[in-house]
Amino acid sequence: MVLSFSRRTFVDRALALGAIALSSRSLTAFAQSNPTSTIASALRLGRRLRRGDITQIQWQDSIGPLMQSLTADELSDAVGLEALRRRARQVPRGMSMVPVPLLDTLDHDDGAAMRVFFFRAGRTDPPHCHFNSVTAHMVLSGRFRVRHWDRLREEPGRFVLRPTRDRRIGPGDLTSISEQRENAHWHEALTDGVLIDIEQGRLDPSRPPRSRQMLDPTTPPRRDGTIVAPALTVPQALRRFG
Ligand SMILES: [Fe+2]
Image (cartoon, rainbow, N blue to C red):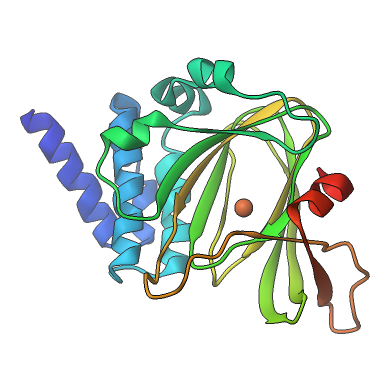
């Protein structure tokens, strides 16, 4: 118990220093010894963001080293992946999302969420943007193409985006979004694959809840490199991209 407390204190102090301190070998050793505590630390990171102790960019810069101090296999074991897989529905398009019950056993703030996404090869989580939240996705298995855009502004029925990254990722790789950096994303499964999603929503509790917004980012770029992405309904997005 004493050891557990001191490890937690170490991680909390590292987190309190902001984004920079989280990639140490000591943190890696800690995480490997206790994956559940690492997940608890990720939830505390969301709490710190929500309380204004760190910025959204610091959350993004910190959540990667923190979660990647676990291997994909360690994280899969910690969340009981195979039991979750048995609960996944077969879906004709898009992916199957299963909440992670471990979340309910750990302290977390309002708006926190943890889910696993199961994909068949060739399926995608259609392109969309988020509001008032940060999320991170780590690959547990398979390979994905992931594309990101900064959300520059919203106009009636559409969003102005700037493309940022388009890459192939595999087990242990992590992507993240926030209101401030790479807010829109699109995960495409190149093989059968699994992502785990760690989210902190309701960052500003005074803002009314707003679901993620599907959009079409495949319009040609304008001269300044930005694109105008029409908003889509979920059925439209699944038909076109899922
Ligand atoms: Fe998303």
